[in-house]
Length: 342
Image 1 (tube, helix red, strand yellow):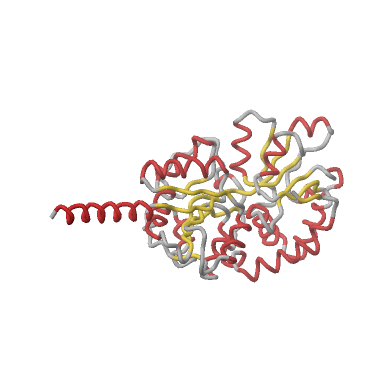
Image 2 (cartoon, helix red, strand yellow; image 1 turned 90 degrees about the vertical axis):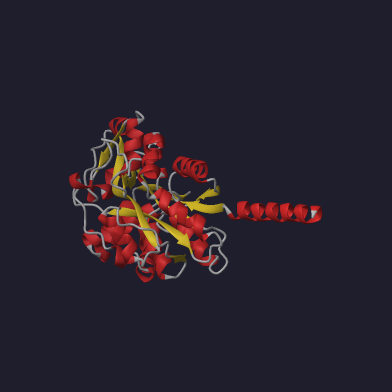
């Protein structure tokens, strides 16, 4: 009887250890590092599930998921622009979460419907550009107001933007200009702007930060990142381009083949909850959340006050469209100036 009791205790301990081992989650995050870290911490505290978090740009994550198809090293992909999430869904790299999205805003529900449940919208980010007022004054340059302004020769060497191969932000810019001006005209405009670009960065938020620090005069990126820097006291001004602009639908997706599906599903529920999304304000996240109950900042970008295009996520989130545009960018835009890579 005693031996049986000991064996039962050992079995129970083993089952408990197995359950604990199962309560883990590998997350790849395409948001800002501080937001990635805070959410991992909060989720772990609230659920008891251990989170291993790594931060990568959306293009890098898409490449990783393709390389690891059938044997994924991550369980869930959170953040980043929606186009690569749509591509991942269409290629079977992600799986439906079966999370109830009926309480989220319409655009988040549309993302879920578009991907047959494989991606859920978590935020909207409006595309624009930012300039450093002090550097602009020192160089006696006019303030840009439109996309076409960025191609003017007086801005040679003054602009920084990310590389669309690695950055979802920069791909959103590429797709936006194609939708605004038509493909050939957009590529020509991007080449003209490229003649003024001093650096193509890997990260989409890097040009905005460099502008705030005075390392470049103008940076292209998402306006919520710019709001954070302005609120921190940097001498910057935000611009919503006069011709109109595009936007991202940030998303969260569960990776197909994950052995931790239930934990991943809990992550999706958490990052789309009002509590989870409201916490972003603690680290200066000023994008537009998908949960209408989430707290927002009065200085956050407002979709109603910006001239937005009717962004075609189905077309520009398709693999063939993305690959064609990236090929044209490499051939006709990247080499148009003296910009360096970082």
